[in-house]
Structure formats: C-alpha cells, structure tokens
Length: 126
Image 1: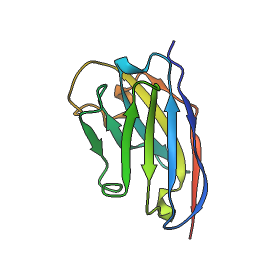
Image 2 (image 1 turned 45 degrees about the horizontal axis):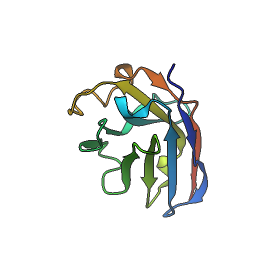
Image 3 (image 1 turned 90 degrees about the vertical axis):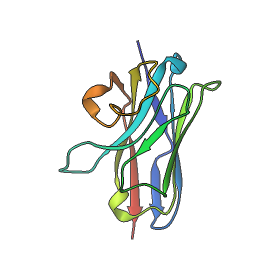
C-alpha cells in the first residue's frame, strides 16, 4: 500500500520561501503531483513530475515561483516554493500515480492519482 508522508509546511511572510517534501517507500514507480486546497475551494493542481524526473508541469499561477523535483534514491519528491503570496495559502497535498509514462498530460487532474498524503498547511501572511 502506498503511504505518502508530507512535511515542510508552516507560516511564512509574503515573499518568503518554503520547501515541501513527500516520501514514499516504493517511490520510483510513480509519477508524483502536488495539489492544494484553500478553504471553500476545490482542490487544484500545482505541479507534477514523471517517474524519472525528466518532465514536469506547473499551474500557471505558480510558474516561475515553484519548482518540483524528486530524488529517487531518497524516495522523496520536493516542492520548492519561492516568492510566496497570500493567495498561496492552502493545505498542500502530495499525490502518486503508478505509471511508467513520460507524459505529464494526465497529471493535472486529482482524479488521475491513486494515492494521497494527509496534507500539510501552508499559510502566507501579508
């Protein structure tokens, strides 16, 4: 069973940075994604990365500010978040999809992911 463990959330001032981490023991067989959900809003796509790390995809709202990466030797995916804005405040979720595909085309919809972490709160103060 896939178990995703997230860490790295917290409170930061606007313009600051945070790095989220997500670990899973059978990691290398999965494409990974980060999603977020603000109060009263639907869960939305943030970023995704294929199993090898060669291809990534980002939501327009985070392009140029966030970077997704993975270290398969450490079974961990990261989301580096820079230039944070108050509108980035949300619970951030790590998700996994078992696939060997090199395409990120389907990796933007929550329904295309098989397993989810518990979420970590990110709060950006103005």
